[in-house]
Each structure stands twice: as C-alpha cells, then as structure tokens.
Image (cartoon, rainbow, N blue to C red; front, top):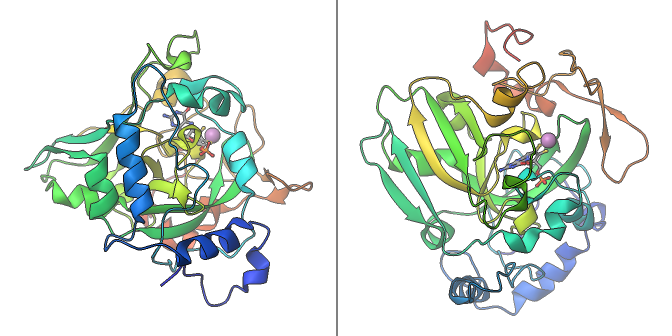
Length: 329
Ligand SMILES: Nc1nc2c(c(=O)[nH]1)N[C@H]1C(S)=C(S)[C@@H](COP(=O)(O)O)O[C@H]1N2
Ligand SMILES: [Mo]
C-alpha cells in the first residue's frame, strides 16, 4: 500500500505539492520493513547517530521521502497543502532564533541523535523511549491538518505521526494525572535562542489537560510530507494539536510529565495577558497584538476567516462544555 489519500480527493488537486508524485515513484522501488519505514530511513537514522559530534548535521534524509505505508485518517482536510518550501522556511522555533527564517538558518545547531523521551510523574510505569523505538513501534499515519499560529497565519501540513494517546497509555497514568506537561530540549551550548535575551524561560514548556492529550486528533509527529521532520520543524519528535494555536504544539520534546496541577506554559509565564493555557483557536477572543478573526494562509494573498477550534469544533467542542471560552482562553 502506498500513500493513501482520502478517496474524495483527486490527485490532481494535490499536485501543487509535487513531492507526492516523486514519493510514489521513489517508494515503489524500495524494500519495506514491517514497521512501514523504508530501510533507508532506518539506516540514515543510524548513520545520524554515529555522525561525529563536532560537525552537527541535519538529518541526511531531509530531502528523501522515506515514510511509506502510512494510514490515512478520517480527520484529514482536503484543503490544498502548503508548499514544502514554505513549511520549512517560515517557522517559529525560538530555540533556533527569533524571526521566521532563523530556524532554518540555525537548523544544524539542533542535534537530534542520540535522542530519547522520558515519561514520568503520575504514572505507574515511568520510563524512557529511545527515538529509534518510537520510530518503529508505532503505526504511522498521515495527518493532514490546518496549523494556525496565534500571529494570524496558517498552513496545511501533512504530518507523519501517531496518536499521542498510544504512547501515553503505555506508561499507565494514575488517577492523579489530570494534566500532561511537555518539555522541549534544553541545550544552551548549541541552541542560540537559549543564549539570547529572548524573554522565555527555558526549556520550552507546554501542557494539555489529560482529555485533550488523549484526544484522537492530538498526535506526536516524527515527519511531514512523507519525510523525516526537518530540524526547524521540531525534529525528531513534536506535538501537533490542530485545534489550538500553534505554540501549543511543542517541538523537539525530551520529557513528558503527568501532573495533578495545571502546568505553566513558557508563553503564559512570559506574557499572561497574551497567551492562555487553553489557547483554543477562537476568532471571538481578541488578542492585544493580532486580530484573530482572520488569518493569512501562507502562500495565499487574501485573508480568510478564522474558525472556532480551527475548524475542528465537531471533534473537540464537547471537551469544553460548560466552560467560558473567553475567560479560559
Ligand atoms: N520548542 C518549541 N516549540 C514550538 C515553538 C518554539 O518556539 N519552541 N514555536 C511554536 C509556534 S509559535 C508555532 S506557530 C509552531 C510552528 O511550527 P512550524 O514551524 O513547524 O510550522 O511551533 C510551535 N512549537
Ligand atoms: Mo505560533
């Protein structure tokens, strides 16, 4: 099985991202592992791990489509994909520098091997997963989601990943686990943004309520456009929570902690009047700097209306029944 697309999308509608055609051709010639990752992906992951530390490298697989046998998802949008070039050149990743083009310029400062994610806190079975285990032990899916930044721009990105809930359940959260905290890499020696005077306390911390974390729309992503996640997009593993402003989708995660009390995300700590814990996309909740009623889809000229829960209300509105979304922003 090759890349599955929802039946109702004609492939001609998707060809703006010509990578799909290339990928189809590419993958046809490959021997596949049962895990659904091509052997070349596994080999380059290993090469990467053995790569010498003095010249930190971005993943050598960045330009090759490597993920195959991806399950399609009922949640996929059929909107036109954002061009790969935009998705990798226009980023927010403050650890790699302020501004949209710093992350790609500094991408090689992020060292993604060896890498592991530890899971701790209110769990019966705390533990650590190595990134190679994560890459091979989960059934990978393609999730084509809208991504809406609080700065009023948006993209449509085909992520490669799996539901966060599948990973979380393995560690058996206790009944005290009411929230999940996500901690990103802290490596000030290498990451220029963590040495700058950018007003965030490092590491980057985010959090979700447990039901949000377990929701089927919430994924951990390890790739996009069929390829390994580029460093500037949060390699080797990041969160994607499509109904919330983009800053909730933490990049380069090293630790996941189950907690009883609501975590204090980095942005909320820095500017509580601008960023809230929930931060569900909501055109009706005004922001002091960016008008949230409309957004610019990167690559498009005209603005479009923004949508409650970024268009995922049908899936997630029930999580917030009885909550004042204006107060709990
Ligand atoms: N660790 C970390 N995660 C992060 C950020 C960051 O600066 N550091 N920026 C966030 C913001 S504001 C957005 S909009 C998205 C952008 O993801 P993208 O660059 O892959 O489009 O990543 C989010 N995750
Ligand atoms: Mo953002």
